[in-house]
Amino acid sequence: MSPTLLYRETCAYINAAQVSFCKAHAFRAQVTSQLVGSRTSFVKYRSSRSDLRNRIDGKMTSHKNMISEDVMLSDITEVPSVKYNGNKILQLDFNPPTPEFQEVAKRELRETPELQKESIARLRELLKAETDLKCPLENEAWLIRFLRPCKYYPESTRDRVKHYYNFKVKHANVYDNLKPSKERNIFEQNILTVLPNLDEHGRRILIIELGKKWKHNKCSLDEVYKGCVLYLEAAMLEPTSQITGAVIIFDMDGLSLQQTWQFTPPFAKRIVDLLQDVVALRIKNLHIVNQPYVFNMVFALFKPFLREKLKNRIIFHGTDRKSLHQYMSPKCLPACYGGTLGAVEVTAMDWYHLFIQMEKEYEAINSYGYKKK
Image (tube, rainbow, N blue to C red; front, side):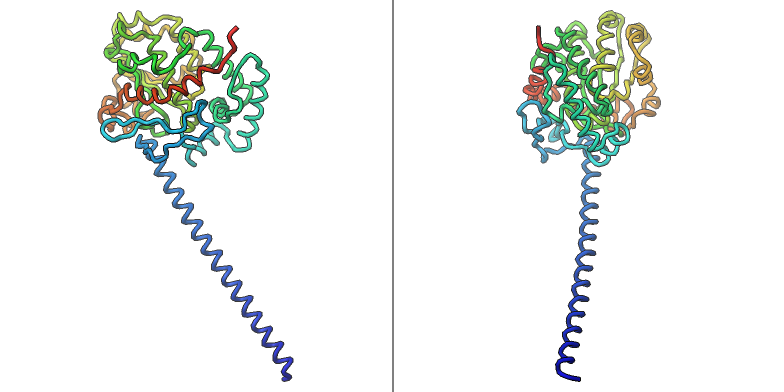
């Protein structure tokens, strides 16, 4: 064989070997990348599940203490928090929904990135046409806050926003300058509180005790109403609560005849209108527990204003804890409702101190609405 031919064959052999080596190296890199990606996904999944469990158990930690700039209407940037029962942390959850709750939003609210973007743009257009209504139209978090409970139908959301602000005008005696610092008394009574944990569906649990704990000569029903609004406004800020909603437990243990006289048809209508047409939060169930016979007189005031949807979500349990547990897991309830959580550890004053840190946000909420004539 000539030297030239030998040289060419040698070069061809070397090139083939190099190509094979490169292919092998590329294949190894691809496999390594897939393994790393799988591990990363697994770690993210584990982290997501852990985060979800912490939210449900009420074990929020303070390491994520900054709020995304578009979540609040005010300039609050740090997550308000207070310590309770030792070193436990009470705070609202401003984190984006976990993958599990994103799936709930997609399934129940039609939420997708594409529809969300489209609905935000359309809602902005609709609200701009309401020239006498001042809204934070550039704040996407605020727009999403109203879109979610309306399942991303812009026209329905526009109507909900109008109801929300018209309601504030109609009941200006209650809503004008409503903020925590002016409502300390209702929190001191400790008859309204939200559990630090979520229920098994990721929903906030508001407990209202209007029986023997309620001193009606020290705390009026209007004060009770305003306290509820402060809690509901706070829940509306939470992305997860916007998706999952909330449940309310009315504990009527020890309700007296004299207390029933405090309820009036106008008050009943205001409460029902709030829950049915105004608040941008999905009220999934209202559980009536420990109610005495005289409660029938109170409920008779509410019945004429209830539409079928809300009426079907009101469940009467009396003292039957098994009945309550058909709707709420004992793992999410305190011992007084047959749960496994022991005594209620959070007081209304704990929430008050938390809400005081959010005073600027409540003032910002109050700054929007229909222009005063």
